[in-house]
Image 1 (tube, one colour):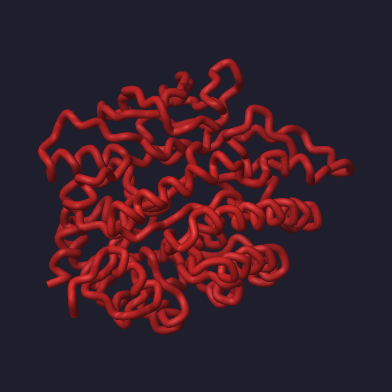
Image 2 (cartoon, rainbow, N blue to C red):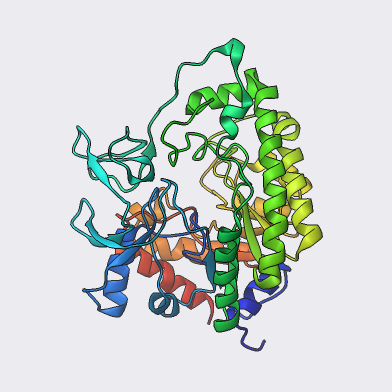
Amino acid sequence: MKCMTSRERLAATLRHEATDRVCVDFGAGFQTGLGAGAVHRLRRVLLGDSNHLVKVVESYQMLGEIDEELRQVLGLDVVGVHGAGTMFGFRNEGWKPFTLFDGTPVLVPERFNVTPAEDGGWLMHPEGDTSVPPCAWMPKDAFFFDSLNRQQPLDEAALNPADNCEEMEVVSDQEIQHFARLARDYHENTNYGIYLTLPGTAFGDIALVPAPWMKNPKGIRGVAEWYMATATHRDYVRRVFEVQCECALRSITKLAAAVGDRAQVVFVSGTDFGTQTGQFCSVQTYRDLYQPFHKAVNDHIHRLTSWKTFIHSCGAVGPFIPEFIAAGFDVLNPVQCSATGMDPRWLKREFGRQLVFWGGGVDTQHTLPFGTPDEVYRQVRERIEIFAEGGGFVFNSIHNIQSNVPTENILAMFRALKDSMK
């Protein structure tokens, strides 16, 4: 087979066609990246540049930028187009030096302002405004933030869905121009596949419910309270989703006109429906509460564009996969093979003709962080053999690689990738 460009390789993969080699993504999405510390050490080993400061391009999960020089060395195929803002309500701009707990020097946005937590960790504040109460906490020696519970007392008799819709709006013209400019630049000046993160389409994503970008979020914002509400106040949640969906469809219409077919795959949802050993809700709850909105978004995208739609849902989501397909999703990530009922051979056999598997390449809970390089190598080769057969596989780890993962294990993963292409 003739050598493909990265864009051709991704396009063929999304069509479930044979490719010259497996398509590889690290860093195109905020679910497929590496912690800034891991990027720093990997870059130092591969490029020998100890003075380069890695940008933290996703402040909530503290993900490092995969710059063009590193992307080429690693043989990556996909680049990402994202909004200009962060989960904490400030923009990715005005970069300044910062030091991680382990002493790793990085760059963070100018409004990335933390204050000390009692345990020696860091507290983050919405919009970087340290005069208001914190919205997130990173424990001492940890690698990413968790949202703090800022749930206000709820009057069960006077719940107003509008409180949970404060942040929902149609994407501004300025932000549309930002997306269009990045997509056009990648499309015209590179041969990479292009992945775009849609704003406002992740219904019930528990990372977004607490609204860490808002100084005073109203409504149901606690994690436990939200999950309970999907059962006890389903009409409330449905009304929130209706408002969100209306905004999302209008935003998609604007993005489709501005970006066109320069993007190939779009991130739609990051809502987790699986735990390690089970599900967050019943299949029937998914059908009743989530699926109608997923289908509305996916149908709208497929009517207007050639984009393939991507759902990120962790854990034991096997029972939901037929429902995801019925809702119109084309791509499943992160393919958590360590969860109950997520055997890779079964997944490929049952759903490999209908879904592209984007992930599943190596276990980030056990093998990659705690295994030996030989164990990493063997698992990567096995997963490629399973998932790449017949096409429809983008290699990525199972979720983001954390900053403390041994560099020799990451190198073993890429060595296995390279050897699989011979």
